Image 1 (cartoon, helix red, strand yellow):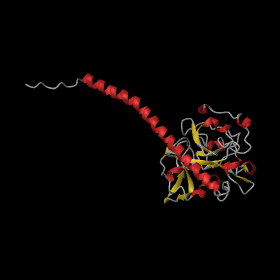
Image 2 (cartoon, one colour):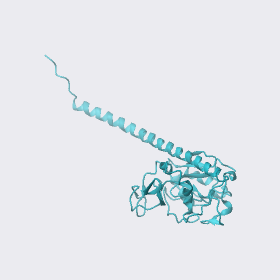
Image 3 (cartoon, rainbow, N blue to C red):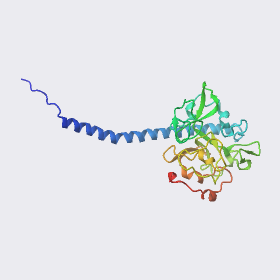
Length: 271
Protein backbone atom coordinates (compact mmCIF):
# COMPACT_ATOMS: atom_id res chain seq x y z
CA UNK A 1 0.00 0.00 0.00
CA UNK A 2 1.46 3.33 -1.07
CA UNK A 3 1.96 5.94 1.62
CA UNK A 4 0.50 9.36 1.03
CA UNK A 5 3.00 12.17 0.33
CA UNK A 6 3.65 14.51 3.22
CA UNK A 7 2.07 17.97 2.63
CA UNK A 8 3.48 21.29 3.78
CA UNK A 9 2.09 22.54 7.01
CA UNK A 10 0.86 26.12 7.25
CA UNK A 11 3.86 27.04 9.40
CA UNK A 12 6.30 25.64 6.84
CA UNK A 13 4.56 27.50 4.02
CA UNK A 14 4.72 30.75 5.95
CA UNK A 15 8.42 30.21 6.64
CA UNK A 16 9.11 29.67 2.91
CA UNK A 17 7.16 32.81 2.02
CA UNK A 18 9.06 34.78 4.65
CA UNK A 19 12.41 33.55 3.30
CA UNK A 20 11.41 34.49 -0.25
CA UNK A 21 10.36 37.93 1.00
CA UNK A 22 13.69 38.43 2.78
CA UNK A 23 15.66 37.37 -0.30
CA UNK A 24 13.61 39.68 -2.51
CA UNK A 25 14.21 42.54 -0.08
CA UNK A 26 17.94 41.88 -0.28
CA UNK A 27 18.10 41.45 -4.04
CA UNK A 28 15.86 44.27 -5.26
CA UNK A 29 18.13 47.12 -4.03
CA UNK A 30 21.11 45.31 -5.59
CA UNK A 31 19.28 44.99 -8.92
CA UNK A 32 18.20 48.63 -8.72
CA UNK A 33 21.79 49.76 -8.15
CA UNK A 34 22.97 47.57 -11.02
CA UNK A 35 20.37 49.12 -13.33
CA UNK A 36 21.41 52.59 -12.20
CA UNK A 37 25.07 51.81 -12.89
CA UNK A 38 24.10 50.59 -16.37
CA UNK A 39 22.28 53.86 -17.08
CA UNK A 40 25.26 55.81 -15.84
CA UNK A 41 27.57 53.81 -18.13
CA UNK A 42 25.26 54.45 -21.10
CA UNK A 43 25.25 58.18 -20.36
CA UNK A 44 29.04 58.28 -20.21
CA UNK A 45 29.19 56.33 -23.48
CA UNK A 46 26.87 58.90 -25.08
CA UNK A 47 29.09 61.75 -23.91
CA UNK A 48 32.25 60.06 -25.19
CA UNK A 49 30.61 59.76 -28.59
CA UNK A 50 29.69 63.41 -28.36
CA UNK A 51 33.34 64.09 -27.59
CA UNK A 52 34.27 62.58 -30.94
CA UNK A 53 31.50 64.55 -32.67
CA UNK A 54 32.59 67.86 -31.16
CA UNK A 55 36.24 67.21 -32.00
CA UNK A 56 35.40 66.35 -35.62
CA UNK A 57 33.37 69.54 -35.92
CA UNK A 58 36.24 71.64 -34.58
CA UNK A 59 38.80 69.90 -36.80
CA UNK A 60 36.66 70.74 -39.84
CA UNK A 61 36.40 74.37 -38.76
CA UNK A 62 39.95 75.37 -37.84
CA UNK A 63 39.69 74.21 -34.21
CA UNK A 64 36.84 76.71 -33.77
CA UNK A 65 33.39 76.26 -32.25
CA UNK A 66 30.21 77.62 -33.85
CA UNK A 67 29.20 81.26 -33.29
CA UNK A 68 26.06 80.50 -31.29
CA UNK A 69 24.18 83.37 -32.91
CA UNK A 70 22.22 82.11 -35.96
CA UNK A 71 18.97 81.66 -34.02
CA UNK A 72 17.22 83.53 -31.25
CA UNK A 73 17.62 80.58 -28.86
CA UNK A 74 21.39 80.83 -28.62
CA UNK A 75 21.80 78.41 -25.73
CA UNK A 76 20.79 75.62 -28.09
CA UNK A 77 22.20 76.86 -31.39
CA UNK A 78 24.78 74.06 -31.23
CA UNK A 79 22.23 71.43 -32.25
CA UNK A 80 21.92 72.97 -35.73
CA UNK A 81 25.55 72.05 -36.42
CA UNK A 82 24.87 68.34 -35.98
CA UNK A 83 21.65 67.81 -37.90
CA UNK A 84 23.38 65.17 -40.05
CA UNK A 85 24.46 63.16 -37.02
CA UNK A 86 21.85 62.75 -34.33
CA UNK A 87 18.99 61.50 -36.60
CA UNK A 88 21.03 58.33 -37.11
CA UNK A 89 21.56 57.97 -33.35
CA UNK A 90 18.76 59.89 -31.60
CA UNK A 91 19.49 58.35 -28.16
CA UNK A 92 22.74 60.36 -28.13
CA UNK A 93 20.69 63.44 -27.22
CA UNK A 94 19.16 61.73 -24.20
CA UNK A 95 20.61 60.53 -20.92
CA UNK A 96 18.83 57.26 -19.97
CA UNK A 97 18.09 58.78 -16.53
CA UNK A 98 16.03 61.54 -18.19
CA UNK A 99 12.76 59.66 -18.52
CA UNK A 100 10.00 62.26 -18.13
CA UNK A 101 9.05 65.92 -18.48
CA UNK A 102 8.09 68.65 -16.06
CA UNK A 103 4.35 68.77 -15.61
CA UNK A 104 2.28 71.97 -15.58
CA UNK A 105 2.16 74.07 -12.45
CA UNK A 106 4.63 74.71 -9.67
CA UNK A 107 6.74 72.18 -7.79
CA UNK A 108 8.26 68.91 -8.92
CA UNK A 109 5.34 67.61 -10.97
CA UNK A 110 6.42 65.06 -13.55
CA UNK A 111 4.59 63.73 -16.58
CA UNK A 112 5.15 61.67 -19.73
CA UNK A 113 7.47 62.58 -22.60
CA UNK A 114 4.55 63.14 -24.96
CA UNK A 115 2.20 65.03 -22.64
CA UNK A 116 1.00 68.14 -24.56
CA UNK A 117 0.59 69.98 -21.24
CA UNK A 118 4.22 69.52 -20.21
CA UNK A 119 6.29 72.64 -19.67
CA UNK A 120 9.60 72.88 -21.48
CA UNK A 121 12.08 72.97 -18.61
CA UNK A 122 13.06 71.90 -15.13
CA UNK A 123 13.65 68.76 -13.08
CA UNK A 124 16.74 66.55 -12.78
CA UNK A 125 15.18 63.59 -14.61
CA UNK A 126 13.29 65.61 -17.21
CA UNK A 127 14.00 66.33 -20.86
CA UNK A 128 13.60 69.67 -22.63
CA UNK A 129 12.60 70.50 -26.19
CA UNK A 130 14.08 72.26 -29.18
CA UNK A 131 11.63 74.41 -31.20
CA UNK A 132 12.25 72.21 -34.24
CA UNK A 133 10.99 68.82 -35.37
CA UNK A 134 13.05 65.68 -34.96
CA UNK A 135 14.73 65.17 -38.38
CA UNK A 136 14.51 61.41 -37.87
CA UNK A 137 10.75 61.66 -37.27
CA UNK A 138 9.25 64.98 -38.42
CA UNK A 139 5.99 64.32 -36.59
CA UNK A 140 7.81 64.44 -33.25
CA UNK A 141 9.39 67.32 -31.41
CA UNK A 142 13.13 67.06 -30.82
CA UNK A 143 13.81 66.23 -27.16
CA UNK A 144 17.15 66.20 -25.35
CA UNK A 145 18.70 66.15 -21.89
CA UNK A 146 22.27 67.32 -22.51
CA UNK A 147 23.40 70.95 -22.57
CA UNK A 148 26.38 72.94 -23.80
CA UNK A 149 28.74 75.12 -21.79
CA UNK A 150 27.81 78.23 -23.77
CA UNK A 151 31.19 79.83 -23.04
CA UNK A 152 32.65 77.59 -25.78
CA UNK A 153 30.93 79.59 -28.55
CA UNK A 154 32.91 81.76 -30.98
CA UNK A 155 30.57 84.80 -31.01
CA UNK A 156 30.47 87.22 -33.92
CA UNK A 157 28.91 89.90 -31.71
CA UNK A 158 30.02 91.75 -28.58
CA UNK A 159 28.25 89.29 -26.32
CA UNK A 160 25.61 86.59 -26.27
CA UNK A 161 22.78 86.89 -23.75
CA UNK A 162 24.93 88.99 -21.43
CA UNK A 163 28.05 86.84 -21.66
CA UNK A 164 31.19 88.86 -22.44
CA UNK A 165 32.60 87.79 -25.82
CA UNK A 166 36.17 88.15 -24.50
CA UNK A 167 35.58 85.36 -21.97
CA UNK A 168 34.48 82.75 -24.53
CA UNK A 169 36.82 79.85 -25.28
CA UNK A 170 36.15 79.96 -29.04
CA UNK A 171 38.73 77.20 -29.73
CA UNK A 172 39.79 73.94 -28.11
CA UNK A 173 43.39 75.18 -27.93
CA UNK A 174 42.55 78.07 -25.60
CA UNK A 175 41.75 75.83 -22.65
CA UNK A 176 44.76 75.79 -20.33
CA UNK A 177 43.25 72.93 -18.31
CA UNK A 178 41.42 70.80 -20.89
CA UNK A 179 40.81 67.95 -18.44
CA UNK A 180 38.93 70.35 -16.13
CA UNK A 181 37.17 72.61 -18.65
CA UNK A 182 33.53 71.55 -19.19
CA UNK A 183 32.24 71.31 -22.75
CA UNK A 184 28.93 69.47 -22.63
CA UNK A 185 26.91 67.31 -20.25
CA UNK A 186 23.81 66.47 -18.26
CA UNK A 187 21.58 69.52 -18.04
CA UNK A 188 18.01 70.73 -17.61
CA UNK A 189 18.25 73.08 -20.60
CA UNK A 190 19.91 73.39 -24.02
CA UNK A 191 22.94 75.12 -22.54
CA UNK A 192 24.06 77.75 -20.05
CA UNK A 193 27.03 80.01 -19.41
CA UNK A 194 27.77 79.78 -15.68
CA UNK A 195 29.37 82.62 -13.70
CA UNK A 196 31.55 82.07 -10.66
CA UNK A 197 29.13 83.95 -8.38
CA UNK A 198 26.04 82.05 -9.53
CA UNK A 199 23.88 81.15 -6.56
CA UNK A 200 23.23 77.48 -5.83
CA UNK A 201 19.67 76.13 -6.21
CA UNK A 202 17.81 75.54 -2.96
CA UNK A 203 16.73 72.05 -4.04
CA UNK A 204 17.59 69.47 -6.68
CA UNK A 205 15.91 70.53 -9.92
CA UNK A 206 15.00 74.08 -8.90
CA UNK A 207 14.84 76.26 -11.97
CA UNK A 208 12.91 79.20 -13.34
CA UNK A 209 13.10 78.36 -17.01
CA UNK A 210 15.10 79.82 -19.83
CA UNK A 211 14.86 83.43 -18.58
CA UNK A 212 17.97 83.16 -16.41
CA UNK A 213 19.30 86.04 -14.41
CA UNK A 214 23.11 86.31 -14.22
CA UNK A 215 22.95 84.47 -10.90
CA UNK A 216 21.16 81.35 -12.14
CA UNK A 217 23.08 80.04 -15.15
CA UNK A 218 24.70 77.23 -13.13
CA UNK A 219 21.27 75.89 -12.18
CA UNK A 220 21.00 74.13 -15.53
CA UNK A 221 23.90 71.81 -14.60
CA UNK A 222 23.72 71.80 -10.77
CA UNK A 223 21.46 68.78 -10.37
CA UNK A 224 21.55 65.24 -9.01
CA UNK A 225 20.89 63.10 -12.06
CA UNK A 226 23.54 60.50 -11.30
CA UNK A 227 24.02 60.01 -7.56
CA UNK A 228 24.97 63.46 -6.20
CA UNK A 229 25.86 65.06 -9.51
CA UNK A 230 26.07 64.85 -13.29
CA UNK A 231 28.19 63.41 -16.06
CA UNK A 232 30.23 65.96 -18.00
CA UNK A 233 32.27 65.92 -21.21
CA UNK A 234 35.52 67.90 -20.91
CA UNK A 235 37.75 69.63 -23.46
CA UNK A 236 40.17 66.69 -23.46
CA UNK A 237 37.25 64.49 -24.65
CA UNK A 238 37.09 62.64 -21.34
CA UNK A 239 33.66 62.07 -19.80
CA UNK A 240 33.21 61.50 -16.09
CA UNK A 241 30.95 61.93 -13.11
CA UNK A 242 31.16 65.28 -11.32
CA UNK A 243 29.43 66.19 -8.06
CA UNK A 244 27.05 69.13 -8.20
CA UNK A 245 28.88 70.93 -5.40
CA UNK A 246 32.18 70.74 -7.33
CA UNK A 247 30.85 72.51 -10.44
CA UNK A 248 31.91 75.93 -9.12
CA UNK A 249 35.53 74.72 -9.00
CA UNK A 250 35.71 74.17 -12.77
CA UNK A 251 36.87 76.84 -15.26
CA UNK A 252 33.69 77.41 -17.26
CA UNK A 253 35.08 80.53 -19.02
CA UNK A 254 38.54 81.99 -19.71
CA UNK A 255 38.80 84.20 -16.62
CA UNK A 256 37.18 81.98 -14.00
CA UNK A 257 37.87 83.26 -10.48
CA UNK A 258 38.16 80.26 -8.16
CA UNK A 259 38.39 82.53 -5.13
CA UNK A 260 35.06 84.13 -5.93
CA UNK A 261 33.52 80.76 -6.78
CA UNK A 262 34.60 79.40 -3.38
CA UNK A 263 32.48 82.05 -1.66
CA UNK A 264 29.22 80.62 -3.00
CA UNK A 265 27.07 79.13 -0.23
CA UNK A 266 26.06 75.57 -1.01
CA UNK A 267 22.73 74.20 0.29
CA UNK A 268 22.42 71.08 2.39
CA UNK A 269 21.21 68.82 -0.43
CA UNK A 270 24.56 69.23 -2.22
CA UNK A 271 26.51 68.14 0.84
